[in-house]
Amino acid sequence: MENVTRAKIWANVPEKDWNDWHWQIRNRVTNVKQLEDIIKLSRQDKTEIARCLSKFKMAISPYYASLMDKSDKKCPVRMQSVPTIFETRTADSDMHDPLHEDTDSPVYGITHRYPDRLIFMITDQCSMYCRHCTRRRTVGITDKRISDAQIDKCIEYIKKTKVIRDVVITGGDPLTLEDSVLEGVIKKIRAIKHVEIIRIGTRMPVVLPMRITKKLANMLQKYHPLWVNVHFNHPHEVTKEAAEACNILSREGIPLNNQSVLLKGVNDCPHIMKRLVHDLLMIRVRPYYLYQCDLSIGIEHFRTSIGKGIELMERLRGYTSGLAVPTFVIDAPSGGGKVPLMPEYMISRSDKKIIIRNYEGLIAAYTEPEKGESSCKKCHLCDNVFKEDNIGIAKLFSGKAVSLRPMDSKRGHEISGTKFHA
Ligand SMILES: *Cc1c(COP(=O)(O)O)cnc(C)c1O
Ligand code: SF4
Image 1: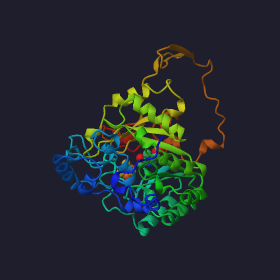
Image 2: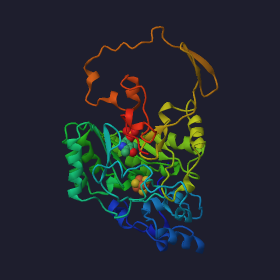
Image 3: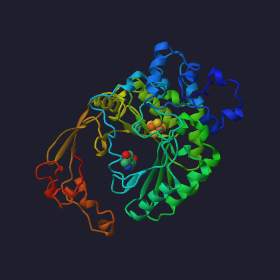
Image 4: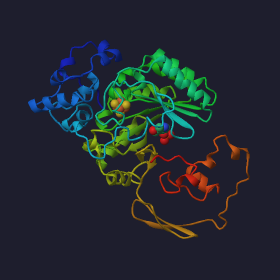
């Protein structure tokens, strides 16, 4: 693991400035002219990037820009941060809001999709605009945080929605907010009795590790249990600086989980993926999700087949530490939420036996218990507040329904207690 070597144009910037996250944000690379000083661009590249910038923003921190290979167009860091002409193309399957984050939003700033948790988008600003960003329809548009009044409306919603036990603060990147402003928001969430855990989703440790100061980590730990999700996609991103940023958070007892996006040409290779998950464990970051690329506008060139993702999972499970294996998920279009996918491990079953195979191809029988019925004694947890027995597949298991039907099936509305989007 190495420190980043600064690109030439920043070679003489004093350490103090370089390590100051405000300096890094102020000096983000946002146009072709600045970019030219860092990587080699042909005349055609320049025209194409400029065309793309009329549609989507670019912003690359000097730190992240320095990680780029100067001449390799396929550099994984460059591919994630420098636009290409492909972004100006809209594929037939592309959607403005594939995940229905706007539809499932009771208050501007919140997407409430699952029974017990929600995401709270407090800003649309990021320190680096990822070319593959799923929220590109909103991210970077105003390049600032939502208003105090709007934050309070969101807090009110969480307060009155007593089933919420997990609040995911996201954006944009919430760590673009000043410590004091961020603390103001977290403090209000922590004061809500029914909120058990707070999570923050951020790419800062990857794209601007200087943001992770001891002061920030010390502020965050006051609001435990607090978890942080990060977003590493390629082993090149795991630098000494990134490792130190993660270390500062871990030392304050903040568990770190990684959410990668499967990207064609960046990490859609079993060897790269394995290197990445191993490098993450070395810096005490647990691989959490590997996302199939969404159907957002202008990112089709990043999409791999689902089969590629399954193949990567096949090449991890068994071959390496279970801790290194993320869950591969598709965020179902139309707001279906995350759906896990994996290779088939169950080969067959009868009422007595289940036949499974492992990563080596070994085939084995597992015998079900003689007395398979539940030993439930109906303790007080049975009538928990979430009434999960009434939701989705659990409703079928509990016997409260014998079928669920999509709303747009002919007789859908008669039985379905679950909200489906057409
Ligand atoms: C991803 C996501 C969550 C959190 O999902 P987990 O599986 O609990 O990490 C919550 N709400 C929305 C809308 C999401 O997209
Ligand atoms: S950091 Fe996240 S929200 Fe921001 S551009 Fe990247 S993927 Fe999108």
